[in-house]
Length: 269
Ligand SMILES: [Zn+2]
Image 1 (tube, rainbow, N blue to C red):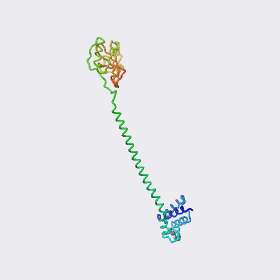
Image 2: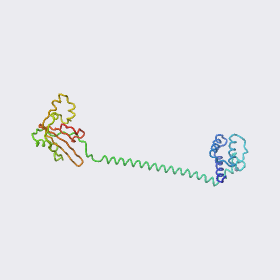
Image 3: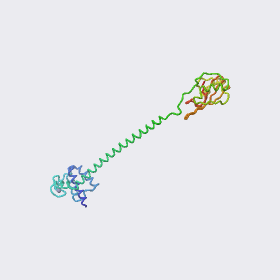
């Protein structure tokens, strides 16, 4: 058996003897069970120690001599001299130091963990702030295609009898100064009923609801002037078609009425 191993064994016995009351069978059984797993007490001293503490727990008479040196022992196991000599040895001091180092290392570990946690929390907060900043930037981007309210003509119905008169009526609502371009397309025919709708009504929606009798009147045709309208700016483009009948009533199709159907005529004037 190596010297180091024996020192470890003796120190272990002293520790047990200073810590536990061997008159309790529970305590001794616990120590012996642990010993079966770890097998520390293998020397002649260890074997004597195990037998002694078992005898004490079982209530048997012992010779009350130190299991290490054979001198009388007050605690029935290890004499005071051996307790002091082994407990105060260099080996024992080193063991205690190692234990202390272990616990201070654990304390350091706990501190490092706390610092890491704080760093993690700071990072998460920073990420959240960056997200909020990006959202704020996004919300501050100008809206290049704002939703507009459906528009109706601001002008009175005025009869027209020529292409020029028709053009002059259309450009009242879509003036060149406001970047509109109105171009005559053709004369054509359109349903009479569409010009009889209320201002703002969608022709298609109304036509779907018509009774047979109403259809009879509605789908006659009349001559109209047809104009293309365009509006182009850097970030916005609007296109449409305006039709005006001889009474000066106008229906309008296209992207002038955001939020509405751009593929259907609306009664405009
Ligand atoms: Zn002794």
